[in-house]
Image 1 (cartoon, helix red, strand yellow):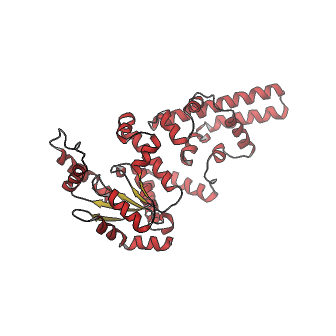
Image 2: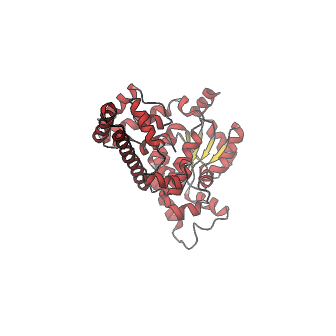
Image 3: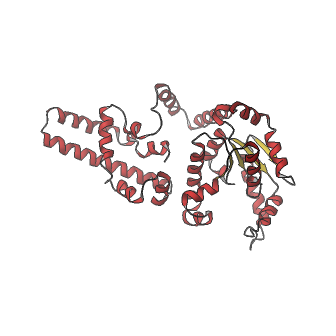
Amino acid sequence: MSSTESTQLFNVNNYSNRKTETMFETAHQSEIGGNPIDVKKSRESINAEFLGSVGSKIKKIRKEKKLTRKLLSAKSGVSERYLALLESGKGNVSIALLRQVAQSLDVEPEILISNSAPINSESRLLLGLLAGLSSIDQHRFKDQLLKELRNSPSSRSYRIALIGLRGAGKTTVGQRLAVILSIPFIEIDREIEKLADAPLSEIFITYGQEGYRNLEKTCLENVLSNGQNCIISTGGSIVQEPHTYDFLLSTCYTVWLKASPKEHMDRVLAQGDLRPIAGNGSAMEQLKQILVKRQSNYEKADVTVGTDGKNPNIIASQILADRTLRKLIQHTN
């Protein structure tokens, strides 16, 4: 589970600040002059309420994200049985003890739970300023920040992400680039299948598009977490998920492998997959509509390379000839 999700799951700020402060104050007064038995009962009551709140938040967020316990277990590495205990408010008491330690240290519990570094004063100031902006201004600020990150070699290294519909040549070109640059080639769809221990067809049937996108985001974060240079082949619909696509754009050099609708269809059929046209007389028209719908998002890539009628070696050479990518490679080396 990512540090962001851990913070969300255990965010005590949402745990009724006023009520929490009252409970802390009551416990503190009991410790100073109360009966030891009453103090113990008070602590047990506070811990039980805290665990119940944590469990409720986990269950609520999990359902909002349309994750089954099985999927959440796979993402977090926590067993389904223990997740069920957490959601029922009967998790290991060590969480409650952690709350007590955090109280003694005068920090919020998520600071101790999260893998990320504590937020410093400058970061808190920025968050406060962001909170005061309108939704439109927040989006404008985000776009500007992503633009700055994309212009920073140190933030992207030379991780190359290939985007485009199926049949664009992402796998063939990606494998060629990986050989030329001597770095790994990673297909996000294969990583998703490994994580879910199921083929894509079964994932879509069982968990739907939303479940697939959750797995896609997790796998992309896992691949990029170690900062390793690599070639990444993404799913064709990644541009439809704003948060995941923004993350990709800000951390990778992105290439749209652009092909005509006919080229896409011919390549898929050449792979022996007849499903796109099976019993569907309007398959080509639907494909054209998908490309039109996604074009503006695909065009956000660092560079666009047309692939119609081109040899994969030529396409790879065109990508590596881009000035920005050459700078990223030189910076890393």
